[in-house]
Image (cartoon, rainbow, N blue to C red):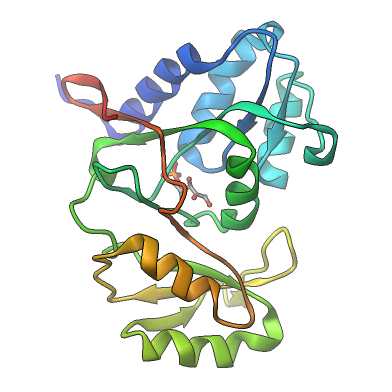
Length: 224
Ligand code: 5RP
């Protein structure tokens, strides 16, 4: 029997519950796979002290399950950060930000001892870059950052939805960079971080995933 992409996402979301350590505060990502995980977490919510959310949407969904949402400034460490990805390599480098939450995702992940990436098998790639690379930018720098990204060989496009520029939870814009073949994700992450006006680049390579759980037709596979 073939599994749909959503069924694979649900399967990895269920498997990720094994990485939720009792009595701890955990970090929770954003997107459809993270949403499936939140729904699973709701079933065992008494196991954890609370969660730090990587977006307003995630905070709302956690609260809807009666899970306490904590401010990152009140938390010293997170045992684990669980989130999806738009692309992931076998080494655990990722492109994230398809849901425009990349900045808070990177911040919350940075405080976690382990990053567990949950994704359906279609997200596994040899080389990152087929999925347009999201870059969150300060709105007044959209044009200047776009020029710098073009100079790196990409095709930058301001993210627009339903005719309006997408605004992130931080009040910023997203530029999606098409046509990149990212052979050295660690170096490119540093290079794009250095462009003035960039808030965050959706390359998660300097700190990639420690563990990858991939949903496949043959069940959930652990990558690392
Ligand atoms: C949001 C993200 C998501 O993790 C990424 O877009 C994957 O989303 P989905 O689980 O819906 O496939 O980075 O900013």
